[in-house]
Image: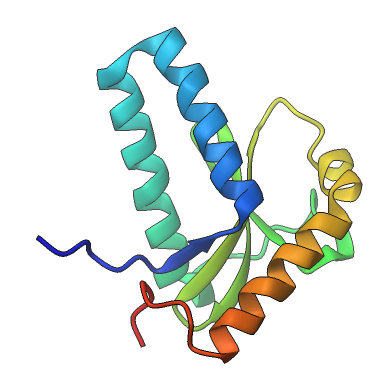
Length: 131
């Protein structure tokens, strides 16, 4: 069965954040609760992408970076909209962490990863995204 297209792209940093969060959740809560938690994260990312225009922009923690943030359970999904119904998830950060400091410290990496994704998109080399 073909995998359903997602309305979001994960940067390498976001992929790492999700893997680390999943490992921590598995060790703390077990498979069933971890599966539900990550299903909630996925559904929230899809909801964000499909409802970008109707969501209030929350930039209090992201400053003038151009990034937007959305709370999902114990985490923030940090993202940048790239079209009417698509986003790039830049990071997954626990709500208890210092989000502005993390984003500031990783600004160069975030910009580099976004540039790479924008290049791939312009060259139409992101096959998992619907047109």
